[in-house]
Length: 306
Image 1: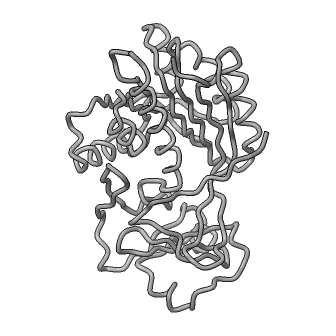
Image 2 (image 1 turned 90 degrees about the horizontal axis):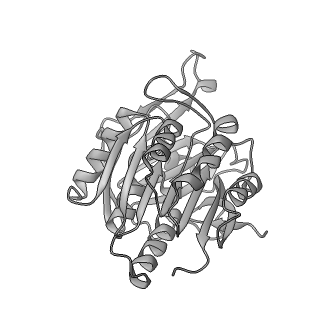
């Protein structure tokens, strides 16, 4: 098992500008933002005024007098509440959120591109009358769903947050994808999968990006290390007879790609294909760039599409 190291490429509107002293400086469209990054234990390379002239910065709870808060943004007056961004075929909004990110995760783009390759291969090689069906659990603001649908998939997008689904609607409309076959559903991921088992619905591809902790729409508790094994056990019951891919991503810091690798391998042991795993890292836009690991992943692909 040789780990892969994936990097977000081909971005016009996003880059890691600099990092150091426990922070990272990133470009999101015309704006730059400083956010906490504990892994950046090295000194920054750019001058202090470059950081000071950023469009905004996120202050973690440890740096605030009120320790009960999760942290807050300090945003300059010339920065709008949201602004347009783009990647490949999709358009979407960036907006500073209370969770310190900007409404999407650019580091996930290697998964979008990889899934699109599998979808296009399925369409070009197979004699199936229908396009591949993809389930995106924990879909958040919808970029993975939009990208998959724009490449020919029929997508079911599930998230427990109504606010997240509203983000996804806005991004769909901004991309002018209203006519693409995407179904948006507010539901607890595990409950939804069990409903799909009872309904007999099947999927050719599954995307999972579960949080470490979360709440369902009716207050259901999600704990990655307790609930993810339960969810993984259910997956074979909603897979089609000839599935093409599964993507499992995690930002959990108490885990490694090895645990995801073997967890997914066990789920797919009766299917012909392979599992690969590793880390995702963002790379500085500099000479001799440093890298920051952001997530771990495991993904399965069918060995041969019939």
